[in-house]
Length: 173
Length: 155
Length: 109
Image (cartoon, rainbow over all chains, first blue to last red; front, side, top):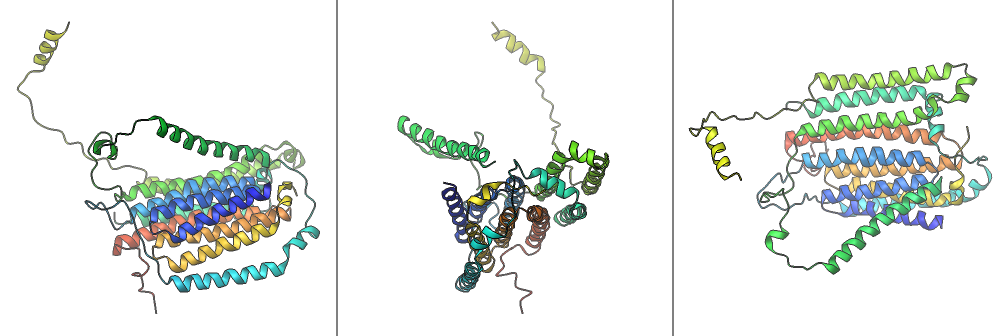
């Protein structure tokens, strides 16, 4: 049962990712990306990382995707042409070589992972686990103890990104 | 944990199925007599003009950007909030844990508040209002004339 | 502090590994073949997502929360990256009125 749901979400995610890859309409790509992010969020939950799944929806779907759509609307060549169609189209480039390289890369990864044999490793080496309701508390404790310096640095990074991006975007308005 | 999320999944599936069922039932029941006016896009009663791909003002982007970065900050606040008042941890560390966590989070929020202050000082949060054009035209018809007409027909 | 739910043990790790490889390769293809700079950005996000998912899955299997914290930081950095990157793309668009990478070839040898 669990495996079937997992595979269903995998198919949903890969399918919508392929849609991002294939579609000519940029806005359709953005909406397909929404489906991909939701599928990945579900897969996070099934990997036992429930808080990451929620974070994925909050940050990626609620934030990054909105920014991307704003980016699309800010850079469409069509503008507001009279009688123009409601589409923002784009072309592909070097399709053959791109697919060849990525396909070869996938083959390489596939071969490596099959040889690595994670199936056997997982039975022997991984530690005992106790049942716990949510990963959010572990995350909190880790953030405040082991990873407190990266945490503060992320704060500084976000501040710099805020200043830099708002400066760039509103330059010579 | 997974069962809780299973409920959410069921909820989502039910929502989607419900939408389609209702639309399908509506399609079965309703009379279908489309015309040009009915099929045109609804723009608050105005005649639709141009296409949907209007170039946005860059100010929208700056606001969205500030929103996203503060949303990330919010995501960092959640796990902190669940352990900040943890009784066990406070007892073990003699009360130090609470103060430490609070100080760290204040530094974090303070750093981002600095960025917000920058955006505020630079005026990214202010919206440029279009000037409202007022007309100098003064009507020769006195206002009480309208009232008289209203009174006349009032019953 | 080794407390990560048991659910992950019911799912073979290989599913996650192969799925992540597929998603990553789709991202690579997107970066190599698409011409719109924003779609290239989306493909980069796909690759980031694939790696994040693999980190989270392995972290659950190993009952070590460190991987999930990494994903957490990666997401924060990704948000900052998108904010700055899109601002740069918007500036490019303002200066040369296009974001087509077939035309943005001044850095090509």
